[in-house]
Image 1 (spheres, one colour):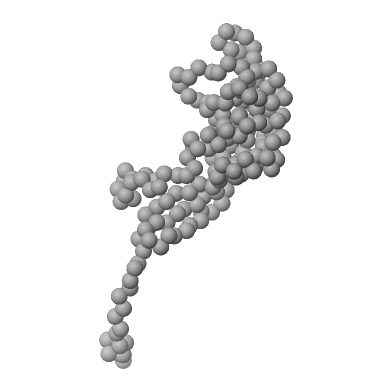
Image 2: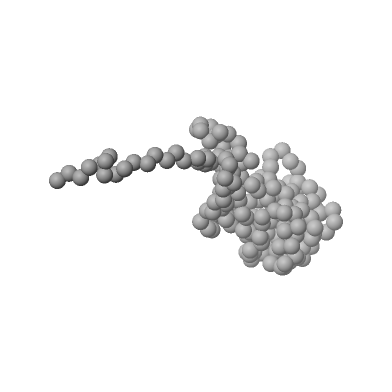
Length: 186
């Protein structure tokens, strides 16, 4: 979907999948592998209380271009730009048994199960690697310690942007006799 005309400084183009769609897809995957009832939320959201234990928090912490752009043309009015990007998402698991649950997350992220899950959603995400899992000290608002395990999941995301493109529908041809139009000079 193209937003804006492409002719003014305020025009912008929508990238697909959006950041929101990436969060939604990874969140659905986490919900499919974590215990029933475990909350999964996007981090860095103001005015939202944390769910009750156990829960997971997702935060995109990096994007890196990993390939040269590709292009396709529809021959009418659109050029589609394709970009391969490595997206890194930090996943934090809070609550009892979060260590065991993190083991499930890292094991399945590197398994065909995750690949098949994203393919079934039709979202252009391919799981790549995970960082080492880490336990962090976490103190709640009630000054109680809580289990917190964290990992960075990396994925390849194929982003597409549709741009307006002009195409020639006809080409006027004027024949010019070169010898007459451009006589030799000596």
